[in-house]
Length: 86
Image 1: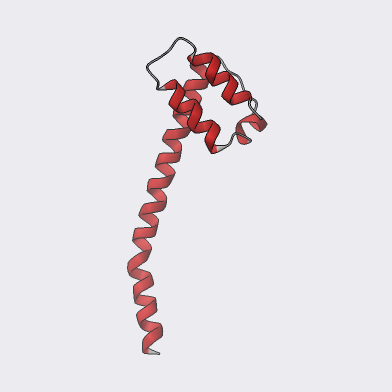
Image 2: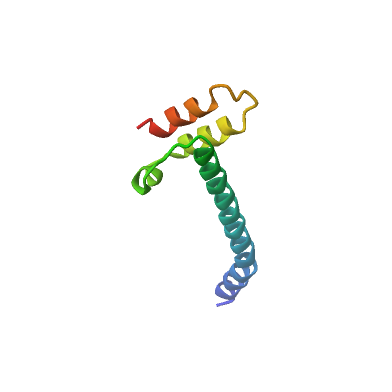
């Protein structure tokens, strides 16, 4: 019984840390989504809802990193190629 009480107490202490991590992750995902949408709209790349949902994390990262690169000459072409890569 003492062991169960110890485990329960540990779980109660750890719960706020997990909640904070979850909230922090949600905030980061929201920021990533905003940067993705900005990059696509700036380059006038239109994706329907299904195409957006099928983007991999590698594609999302590639689009966001390409949009943030200093070389803007082929930026939109690269973003469109990444977005349409299936």
